[in-house]
Image 1 (tube, one colour):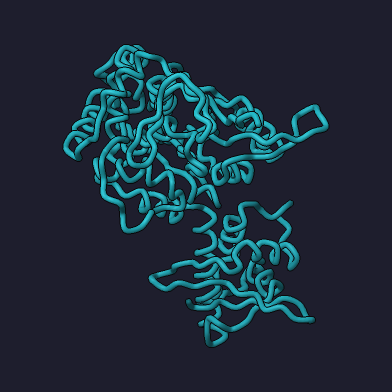
Image 2: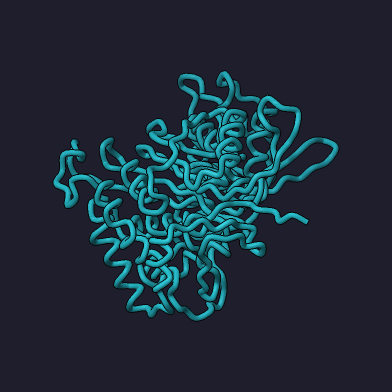
Length: 414
């Protein structure tokens, strides 16, 4: 008979409509306890139905006054503002994207940008979390901060050039709850996945399934010491704290934008796009569907799969009379082996090192001890099977043909 509570809302929440929920009370329907500061409550409750012009004015103020020292482009600003709105609305989102802030140079303000967002929304800097490339350690860490109910977690200063993937985070991004074993105890627990997960690093990117579940804001710089450039606000955190109510009022103005029901819900995160992505697109002129798609195009695994299929298609067409000719893992092994000195290679044969590299990128892992055999090639081909890949305007996929003699493969045009 007792109500199930899945979170504590310290800020008002905007429901579809838009409709504002706030106060200091239990909301049984939402499963939330509202503990909103009366000052913030008064500031936000004054916002009524918002026109597009008012929402655009609020967005411009946020970009030109609050985030004016963040060296990014229009898409980057839209992503950072969408991040702030996502933290506000996190309890309503059964699925939500991860957010990356990347730059080519240290000192570009990656962590500063995320902490400005956290300071504006939560009133303090975000929780900092270390990142491990071991899946088991990722699982423990993610479950621990989900249990704590942190509004936003920053995985800070990921090693330069890292491509991030994590099956645990991928599950957390696309489900409302996560069940796991409590560390040091012989029991499991189910926790909400409302924590917003972010990453910072130099030239980092999401890869694999993370690529289609992440938004990346790129910071730029034209000098080797970007931390010494001129700033509008000498102390961005102090300025953000001093103007927190003004920032929140304008963020809620965007959320409260009265908008026509779209013909279709875009991106894989339908509820997120409806509540957050759609109003930001209307006021900022960006397209989140295209931003997600761009991540997929530059994903290392997708690029590796495309390179492998392109090389094999050229080889099959030139030597066997058609790209749909069948081949085996053993024949790929022969192509991956370096030629002996003086041994020539036909124009249609791929470079062995490039072909091996493409297979490694497509599968997300290198050949152990640099040993390439039919069993290991077959395992890597499994990561490409059935995946539609666009090459020079033609969509192709790798198809496996199974029989008692073993697996054979062919490339099909879709």
